[in-house]
Amino acid sequence: MLNRLNLKPKTLNLFNLIRYKNLLVIVLTQLLVKYAVLEPFGVNTSLDIFSISLLILSTVCIAAAGNIINDIYDVETDTINKPSKVIIGRHISEKAAFNLFIALNLVGVCIGFYISHLVGKSAFFSVFVIISALLYVYASYLKRLFLIGNIVISILVALSLLIIGLFDLLPGITPENQHIQLSVFKIIFYYAAFAFIINLIREMVKDIEDIKGDSKSGMHTLPIIIGTTKAKRVVFALIIITIITISYYVIHLLYKNLIASGYFLLFIIGPLIYISIKSLSASTKQHFHHISTVLKLVMVFGLLSLLLYKYILLK
Image (cartoon, rainbow, N blue to C red; front, side, top):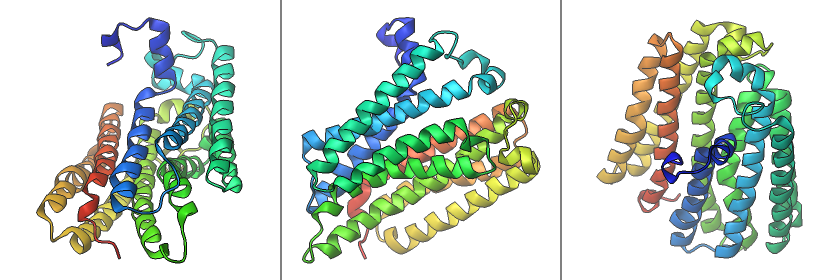
């Protein structure tokens, strides 16, 4: 997409370094939570257009910084796993990348400080500091540990949804509106849980895909510790659990509406059944890359289902 805009190679490399596609998904997700769930429900919110834009900007800056530091620490493994996509040291110097990492973190955290005071919850500022710190620790250490890195990064993905409810919904809770405010927050929590499990599965699949480079770099990912065959079984089991959970959700909450039920069956449950089958027979790097791509699409379509909020029964 960026190539069609005739951007200079250095600009293209910068966009790829910060993983602009993933950042766009974050922006879309947070806008959906705000304008497809919170606003239509008429709940008491704390952020106007300007302040929600700042919150999204803060999230994007910190996420972009996390992507940069991750690439800095992944140069060795990426040289083996995906040599054509290595940017640090080839197109952008490590020093320049690290300086950009610091700058983006400062901008993101400072905006977070402002927003925290704006909603009257100064303690919420710690959320931005914790996320920023975790992204650095993840890239430099946690991602090398058995499952810990996968779980931490998946929690951070879930937080990209929860942070909207935290700053826009919770500050406006009163004894009178507590029920509706918490009911809507429950919807956000369900979607955050969905994002967590799909991302966790995808991280495991990517670990299987990158096992060659990871093992040479001394990492202790799931497939390295228990082997590729057992790792595939873990992925399969998690996908089946996810399918059962989402099916239960559809049967009990959406069964009365054919459009909502059909959407979940066609764009979420169906693809998950497909990759559950593919996960058992996958054997090459290309196979696992395909599964990872489908999981990303499932994530996007799952988040887009927020547009079906009016078909979700609040309890």
